[in-house]
Image (cartoon, rainbow, N blue to C red; front, side, top):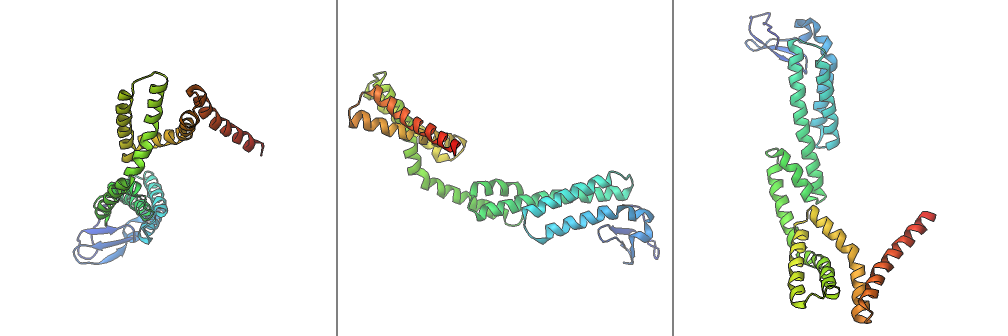
Length: 259
């Protein structure tokens, strides 16, 4: 801060830039900063932005308002760069501190919004960025508990989805490569366990497995019905199982394009 002294007792002056006041730390006398700092009016635009940003953060927990506050703090910091005195340095510090506070407020508000929508994984990711802020630590524990419970409920689904790709692979091994059943069954079980566990973890690999499984489900069912229900040759059954769904997709795409 600028080296200012009290006009009454000569004590050190504490500056509150945001309200534009100087207060003597010794006797408590108060003055407008404009009285003691002739060029303080040059910073009115910066102070206005800082105060507006602080108001946005104090208003409510809202990610959009926090984002607006971040922009105001950054803009204020850019204004400070135009000056090189101690006031500019102090206002720059306030701008950076405010920006950091606004970033945390944005993460917290975003986390709360995800939590209310029961998107616990996204909420957990945001809450972990603001550990120690308000009830963030408590919410982290709640998110972890909800994620663990969701995983338990996901087990039957994971097993069913995890069976599709191994079933197709083992049918191919048995029908085309004539691999003995004694080998295909262990391969099927191992594949189901591995892919089922991937789906259970509910990560990026899970999404890939689920998409692939659902795309292959209809051809698999068609093949099983034709090959084992109607005793159609495996080659023809495979061709129909792949060709019919593919043809339907192409037909729907063509009709949609015409419309």
